[in-house]
Length: 198
Image (cartoon, one colour):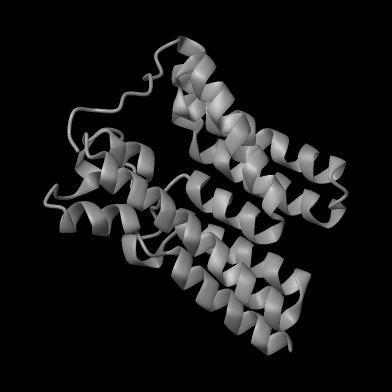
């Protein structure tokens, strides 16, 4: 069983490593998304190209690659195995082997992980993100707030086994957003814009 979990973690990591933002923008004729905006491969940066459809596809794909490994491993090995698969997928997104371990910031994949682990947490994350985005129109602030609150929601919803994992995920999301945090403090962080293309 231990070897099976290790194998599942490796597969989950490889699935998490798939750079959907990069692949979709290349297929869409935009080119290398790493040369656009912040240089990030995630949905927020894809949105900066003005292509809302590709941004939405990137968001969904990055989320699904967090959910699928969890659901498979929960079915085969229980909650703990699912949690390991989720963490492995998250690591894959942040540090993809295909891109010299330089990946995304983990927000969309974290949403998928939350839905896979305990779906109410996924909806709560989205609700917090949307409220913050409506109030401040800053994507990074919305993501930072929602990720920081996720462990608390897990505790309040009687899912203590998820708290530590969500703390770890939240810490990494904040680390990956360190540049955004500096700009937030300086009042220089970009506002959410939808662009002008379909």
